[in-house]
Image (cartoon, rainbow over the protein chains, first blue to last red):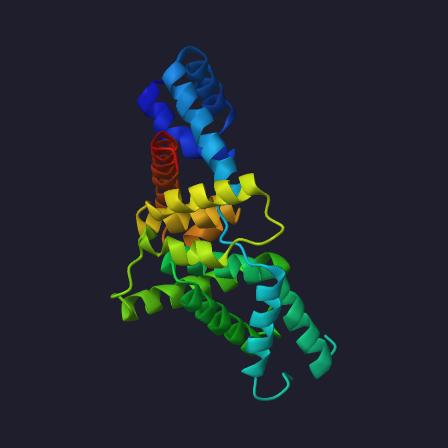
Length: 79
Length: 176
């Protein structure tokens, strides 16, 4: 496996969507390629940062107000 | 299956709203960059959900279904309102309404940094990263919501992550 192969496999590798042979080949390449190892680690960092800090947040008051506004648009009780 | 009373339906609808409103708002906001428009999408999404409430019983499937509606409504709104920019110039408005008293300073700073970085991504890449990494949906749901194949979804997530990495590095270098 070379750097190009690793780049193509990167998403599947992160998804855990690789077979044992692919994983072994990827790990062997990563052990000998600092650049690819940096890309993999950097991508893992980006995923974690996006997950932890990427949401456009709502405050509890916002949720309550939005639900009140939503229910005010319902003409009759649902049935 | 027992027939639910109107009160039971209403309580289930309230639970569904509370469990999913953050994700629906997030997807809409990340596409529209306008809080009022994103709230409009939240309203239309959950009003549609109410009309299908009897079928919405599989919790695992409900969120992707809601997000697909939100995505389609947001895209339709974008097309109707092309005069509204989808760039970071609207961030001051976002920043003015988002901070809450419970936010600790570093979390608010990180959220602002990530928001600025996400805003620099091309729309389709930003949506893919938002669905897969921010909302933690399985790749198959990302593909289904956007209406593309699994391989194409993986490619968009891959490109989006790479773009986000570059944007975050540039933000760090510029001292944001």
